[in-house]
Image (cartoon, rainbow, N blue to C red; front, top):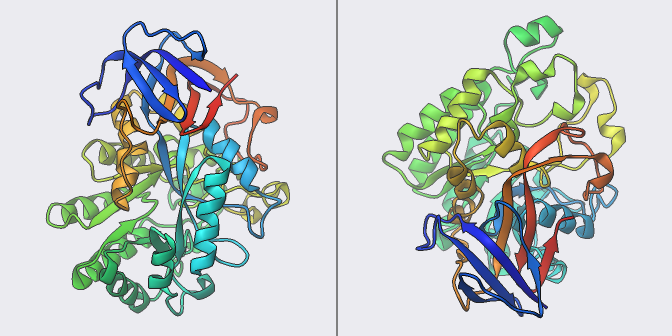
Length: 422
């Protein structure tokens, strides 16, 4: 099948075509031609009033359903949600039953993704069964294709374990990804410590719980002379620590959940359990610091923080609901709607494309004739409503159901796999 993308603006700071409006012809999974006023009678035409094209988006930290949690997400539904959200690549968390901690499991995830049409880059478990006690077989999983190692959104309390992990991956230039928080002082990560937590009568989680662990992890990484990615930063003081460290050490990287760029603890006053997430939503000051961190490259990538959960885990009183929200289908639209006045479109796209790939040295696609077509086609001006019945994910734990967005993915092309929105 041939596809002709008409009059799209290229959004890719690395490309000579950046900012230019062109037509792109895709044939047999590759970019066959780029130019003006292209025509092909046999091609399916993709067009719009304000189309843009970038290389395919990548998400770091996607939670899988299979194996073990098929009632939350299947490979099929995950693929549909990813493509609908503009993602051609997913760096996936090891939380499953059993945990992803062997070479065979890593290879199976990669092959399954390829068969479905989304490239999966698995993160292997940092500790056996994610219990925080002993490191797993890193080298074995690395040879199977694991791009890094993590215990996901479950923080590692033992500094010695993090240090051993950082030292161990040096033999193959690997990366340790860690979600920094000290659970002994975070009070269950119910809500940010402040006036809102007091008014709602709940124990708050101080920013200190994150900042202490950020500082610890950075010091351990400096000692080990290794590579560390601080996943899901939420606090302004954490940004300051990371920014100062990155001035002298480029082996420390960081990411942020899109929800923390949009929402604050003030949005929790109606006890919306779909906004009970990790990391927790913090203050307006923290949100602004995170946005600024994108602009000055303290933060390297934006994550969808996609955590599908069954209704029984979310339709509970706020204190008893589980943490997590789906995000693959809404990340771009929500950012473009609520953050565009503070963070420009080019920066948002950079943090969805080149930023995440640079963390794990994953090959960068390019928009050039002869290259494999790995493209996200979007229109930042389209208005649409996110309806529950249109959700591709098996789960529907989203805080945005019923919201009207500005900006929508029109098509996602990953080689021969092509998704076109309605």
